[in-house]
Length: 382
Image (cartoon, rainbow, N blue to C red; front, side, top):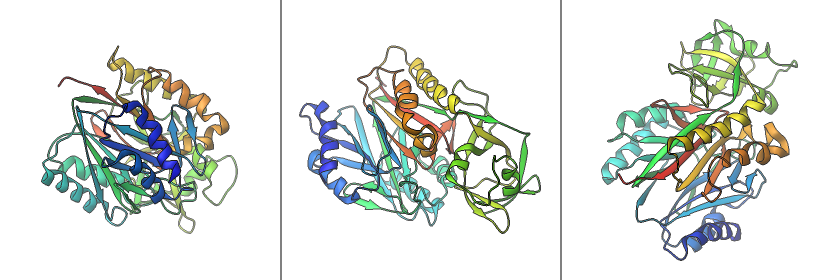
């Protein structure tokens, strides 16, 4: 409880005694998750609370992927409103959960400019989630988010809503008011080989690519012979999904997807949220230098959209594979701090290392892996 209380109290100091309206909380799973929320509640009173567990947390102090880490953003505002939602059953039926969320938002009469999503990171289909929301929400809204994580044990993740801790579910925050959301996406990977086509799928499994077993294709690009998916292989080797979009400054015309399961008998690879048959894909390799450089460039691009303006706060949703797994002890020095340097040092900054990212690319929302999403809320008179 003390860790949650301390994190919230530290964040609340900037409110100078004003009543809190909302608290966003991320914590690693070494903590008692319920106790974390109890400690936050002691500080924020009746404010809405939302968030999720994480593989690691991100603050102005950098990245912390220890077993006991927690961060909170506490907001008091006459200009912003925060409506929070908890939808069970995301892992079992993601489309039904998305429909339930859209209907709950419509029934409440709430409006919003930004919808933040924090789904379970070990199951469910985030592509189905965002497609249903885009079709069924009663108004257009920018959608961003990240899936909950644990400490690379892939056992259980947690979603926070109010004082409740859930698993297998979806937590959402609809933000409205006088602000403008700006979102940038970056991955930092290089394409290798030639474009390919997904030729056979089964649920989330990609069974064949260009008629070849998917695992056999992947193994041809690994440095060492292996019969299993391992963490370092996932950090190195990915599958790029080509998009009908032009290249931007912070990313190319593809999203990045990571295989998280293997059917050794058939050579099928499992991708969270699946990849549809007929999708054009290409093998991609991580580029350590590009990951760091493009993260900084992405935030600079974000700042350039509104020159001279200071964001209310920044939310960073960064893949767990881009943290300590990639950069060792240099995550903060090489990735987090340079990116934060593109904005004034007094801008509140909160983030997490996720098991998957959700963000728009040129007008359509996608599920990403091995990607960083930066979401800034700028004050607006509209």
